[in-house]
Amino acid sequence: MSFHSEVIGSGSYLPDRLVTNDDLAKIVDTTDEWIVERTGIRQRHLAADGELTSDLALQAARRALEAAGTPVQEIDAIVLATTTPDETFPATATKLQAALGMTRGIAFDVQAVCSGFIYALAMADNMIRLGQVRTALVVGAETFSRLLDWTDRTTCVLFGDGAGAFVLRAAEGGPDTIRRQGRGLISTHLYADGRQHDILYANGGVSSTRTTGTVQMAGKEVFKFAVANMAAVGGQALAEAGLTESDIDWLVPHQANKRIIDATAKKLRLPEEKVVLTVAKHANTSAASIPLAFDAAVRDGRIKAGHLVLLESMGAGMTWGASLLRW
Ligand code: ACO
Image (cartoon, rainbow, N blue to C red; front, top):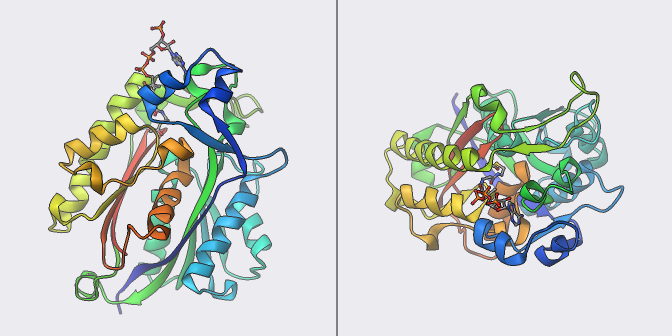
């Protein structure tokens, strides 16, 4: 028996506190104009004191389960992508498991920074394809604001907090069934190149400093690496499925920077009207950005049943990936 995954619901959550570029201009030497021109970001949501990654994940997960009509008792696995776990251990996924009232199944975190959601999606999809899991909750949740140096204008203006989630369910059949039924997760594609460590990292950790450190970034290098590799992996996903850019209804890219997204879409020959953009409102929420953007476009009616959607990410490591699905 062969299986594939269907994404049967999505949900997302943004913390209440809204911080505009003008608000940031009061604490670092920057302007709304500079931030909008270089990144497209106008505002970001930040978690309140005491509001943790698992709290954001819980809200997003509940909304996704509600949208999918899936009771908590049916979840076999939680795969949670985060770079900002509540604690060094155990996995934030296990906190979410308890908070949801889930008393069985497995729960673990995935760490691939801004590519975390695509990595988590691939892990859950692979377990479903193997028949190990029937229903999975895939979450991207971050309180990235806690990793920032709020005196460094080159990084603190770029990020925000939030969470998003998908519910995946096993369905019988392989690629032919997805084609016939017009629904299902077609593929996932993952990459990493650890030689790029130094262009984006946090300068701390349990083993090195017993602290979290703060974000360190060589912006121009990250920009160039992101555009070249995201466009390539998107092209690969299409080619392997025997599809072309004209088949795509929506590109939902990691929301790091509007200029990176524009340049990637151009390389993929996708018009702006087919790109879901939330970076202006959310900033870069790392592993949460793709499910946040996806859920926004589902709820406002842009992504419709049967649409072909390409998800793409780029994160520190560097790590990158893509996933192609029919909603
Ligand atoms: N406000 C005002 N001026 C600033 C700010 C700021 N917030 N930040 C930097 N500057 C200044 C710099 O100090 C520099 O001044 P100088 O010329 O006097 O030295 C000037 O602006 C230009 O700086 P650059 O770094 O050359 O600006 P650039 O055009 O490269 O834009 C940016 C910087 C926006 C970070 C860009 O490189 C970029 O988008 N890189 C991608 C990084 C990214 O998105 N990372 C997210 C995480 S990775 C991921 O998710 C994929």
